[in-house]
Image 1 (tube, rainbow, N blue to C red):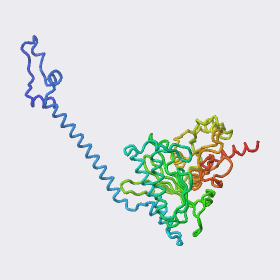
Image 2 (cartoon, rainbow, N blue to C red):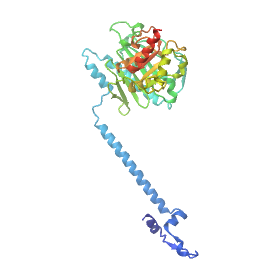
Image 3 (cartoon, rainbow, N blue to C red):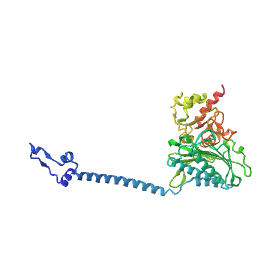
Length: 407
């Protein structure tokens, strides 16, 4: 039918060529003209028309899907935002004055600001070195410096803090008495910043202590065991912006909805699996490990009890590695070794907040000698080994250290 249509439209009748020795066998059909002569204009137009119709149909399907999606969103009116969640928790304590709620709202604001800066880092020329080193001897990235300033100013302006300890500052910041509150906040403004340039997930880690009202703050107020924290959390800047928070009654995850500018509860009451299939460690340091760590990793790769081997997953950003461990189970290890006999991760603003979250989710955290949250730091930038994750997985490495100690 299509060939016939083209034949009629172009007035190309089936003809014979008189010069051909067998004229009746050399018929110029429409197919002959389509294949051996230049492609007729009508065929091109017909092809364009069909293509346009198909594209239009696809576009209509997309529009319908978007409309349906928006219609579904329009009916999602009962959203649990992080602000609403915190206010609900506050209402359970009639004696509360709202100070903690205000403090958390300022932390959330800082996370939103840093999330925006991270997303625009390449365009705003925030990628690269700032030309300085921090107290840890690490070269500071431009985003490190910006993130630190954002959180210090957000926390001070809340009027609810008295001492701030940041990874980027050598000394603790004592808030001016006029703006002073009862909370001490310890934080790493941008953990995993060595991965900024390559787009790997990075994040902010924080922990909160409370001191008694009317007491002048002193550095000892933050040199407390992690079990004394009143809240801890982290915000991960990756494919989505996710804030994970615990105020001592379980762990909840919130995802930033860019269209609303609000963190929405997406992972309520997170519980880590009792045993996982993943282990996370930098095996580049294997030659410097102590015996229990080496034995545990060997057991993960070559189990003797017939169980399947664990999978190795290591990103190199603590927030990303711990977030995966929290959701999927398994164990995260950053042990002491010959190069770093006291471990590498900082106690106050890395080990304690992550250990707090892990225990609240049903897991464990161990330093190689004791429960991580029982550790009492003596310096604000003190370091420690850490093993944290699923309860049963941490039990296994605890048993190996116990056996080593009996030798």
